[in-house]
Length: 247
Image (cartoon, rainbow, N blue to C red; front, side):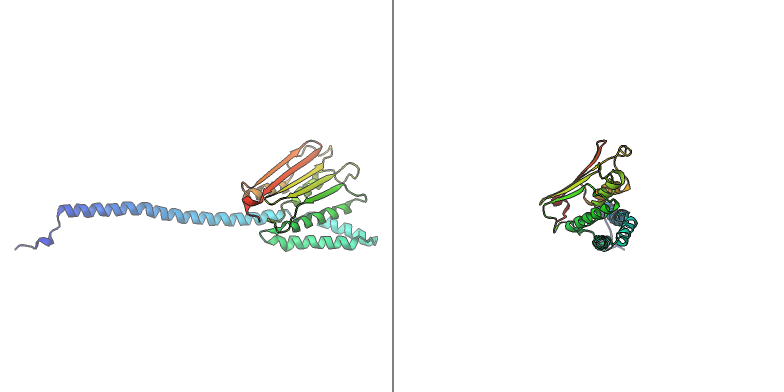
C-alpha cells in the first residue's frame, strides 16, 4: 500500500526545522539572561535607594545641635536675673526646634530658613559668655526660593565652637559668609584655633557627615575644601545649583 507523499517529511525539512528551533533557542537564552539581568538591576537599584534614604535619615539625625541643654540653662539664668533678652532667646530656641522637628523632615528646605537657623544658633551661642563673642555671618544675594537638603551648614559652626577658641572674647573669632548667585552658592567659614587644639584637621563626625551627604546628594555638583593653617580652620564650600537641580 502506498502512503501519500505528504506523509513523508524530507530530510531537508527536518534539518531546516532543527536549525530553526536551535536558532530560536539560541536567541531566547540571551533574552532570558537579559530579562533576569534587568530584574536584578531593578532590585539592586531599589535596595540602593532604600539604603540611601536610610543613610540620609541617619546622617540627618546626627547633625542636630548638641547645645540644647546648655542653652536652656543659659536662658534659665537670664530669667532668674530678669534679663530683657530672655523672651527673645526663648523665641529663637523655639524657632530652631521647630525647624529641626518639622521643616527638616522633608527632602529640602528653603535656604532662607537654613540661614535663619544659623543666625539663631549664633545668637544663642552668645549667651555662653558675659562679653560679646567676635562672631559674624554675612549674606550676599537672595536666599529665598533656593531649595537645598537641610542642615548642611550647621556642622561647620558646631565644629568651630567645639574645636576653636571662640569663647575667648579677646582672641577668638568666627567669620562666615554666603555668596548667593543664580547658579551657585559659595559658603565660607573661618575660625581661630587655640594652641591646644591646633592639631585637629578635618573636624569630627559632623564634617564627615557633610562630606558623605554631599557625595550622596550632589555628586559632581559641589566643591568642599577644609584647611588647617595652625592658627585658623578655613572651610570653602560651593554648591552648583544648575548641576544639582536645587532650584
